[in-house]
Length: 278
Image (tube, rainbow, N blue to C red):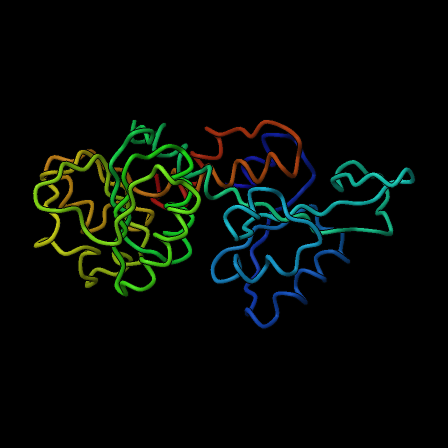
C-alpha cells in the first residue's frame, strides 16, 4: 500500500517492514533516527509504548494516548523544525514527532465505506482495549448520542465509561449491553475475536439481537468476512470490515511524511490485491 503510494508520487523512497520486540522499541526508534528515516508506522503492541519515546506529540497522539505514525524532523539554521524531506543533507538535530492517524481513519471508513453517520447515533462498541478505547473516545468526540461498552472484564469498560463521561458530559455511556429491544444504529467490533475460524462471536447473542441493529463494522479485515459480519449480514445489517480503516490511517501517514495528497485509489488497489488477491 505505502510503496504503491510512494511510486505514484514519484519519490525515491522505500517502505519496509521490521519485526521489533517491545523491549527493543526505544533502540529501534533511535536507530531509525540515526539512519535518517523519513518516518515510521507502529503497530501493536508498540502504539502505547511509543508515547514515552517521542520528543513531541501531535494533539492527536495526546488525545488518544497512542502513537501509530512517527515523522522525523530536523532543525534548520533558524531553529525551525521541519520534516526531513525538506533537507538536502541530514541535519545534526533530529526529533521524533508522534501522531495518531487511527482515530480519524475509523470515522472516515464508517462514513465512506459504510455510509454511517456518527452524530446522534446509538452505538455498541465491543472491546475496551487499545483499539476499542480509541474508537469509543473518537465516536464520543464526533457526537454520538449513546455508547454501550461491552468488554470481557466489566471493570475495564467502566474505566473507559468514566473517561468518556468526563470528556463528553452530554453523552450517554453505559458499560453494558443496551436494554431489551433497544434499536441500535451501529455495532463496532474492536476485539480480536474473529481472526481465527474457531473464535466465538465477540458478543452474547442472548444479550444483543443484531436484528435490532442497522449496521455492523469489524476492525478485522482478514478474513474479509468474520463470523460476526456473517451473522450481521444474515440479520439484515449493512456490513463492512476494517480494511478501509487500515487504508485511511496509511494514507494519512503518507501525507504527513510527504506533504502531498495521498493517491488513495492506487493505495486501495495495492492493499486489496495484497490482502485478498484481487
